[in-house]
Image (cartoon, rainbow, N blue to C red; front, top):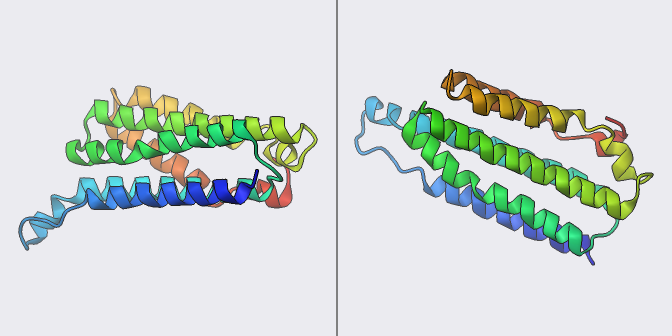
Length: 190
């Protein structure tokens, strides 16, 4: 199978997801600064989600630079990741509508955890296909950054019911952790 087709499909799906998110942003009803300020929660949730999607797209691209071939299991693992990414516009819209409400913030985190788990599954499937001595396996190493992300997301989900703003801050910090592309595939190691 050709990995280029899988990459192109993933690129298209992520572009559509981003397009869906921007279509959820509507201009303010009035022309005042106050009318614009009312959109702040929606706009800020859009920015966070855009950065998260961009980070997945970027790291997916870097990952597939090390891929030599794909099979059916890789296709399904990739679709699994794209499924969870496709839910980001829904939780982004709900988060933007409700502000600092615990349940939307927690559900946002649940979707982020499931995206991270799906990305980890994709990596595991690729390592299984390419072998433990492959460049992918060597580059991933212990995947400390990936494991920490899941732990931080889980803490933020629980924290959303105690300190909702703190949960959002954790989501931002995890995004910042991944903002710089994952260069393990260029230099090897963890």
